Image (tube, rainbow, N blue to C red):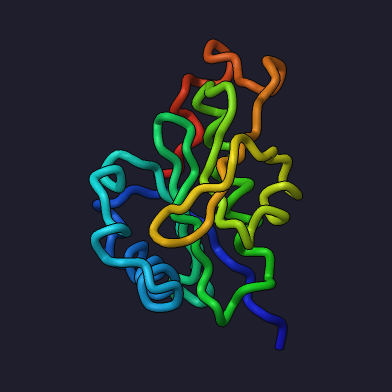
Length: 162
């Protein structure tokens, strides 16, 4: 029987906090040992989130802040290597473009630099430590041609699936 296709939803914290936090807790707190106090912040309430499910089970998440920062990209260990991280990252990049941003950026864990580089992100500045893990800031700039025209594309929030 073929493997079920992952389903991606663009959502918000009030609607899917339980599912989003379950994935992040499993990956960041339990697997990577990040302190609960470092994982949760007020930005969750303001961010647009993506949630990936397989057979209705939450398996991946990420978020985009109004500043253009992509973060909290997490995929459960048991389903890694199936393209779920790429699926989420590409959707978050698209959401940034649709909001008229000039680019998006993130703090990549040092072990994930190649993953983000494969999606067009370029490193900026030196390596630094965040939550006890080496990171590097990476940015993906959008050209003017890649940004939507609000008059044509329905404004900065037209791409949010609700």
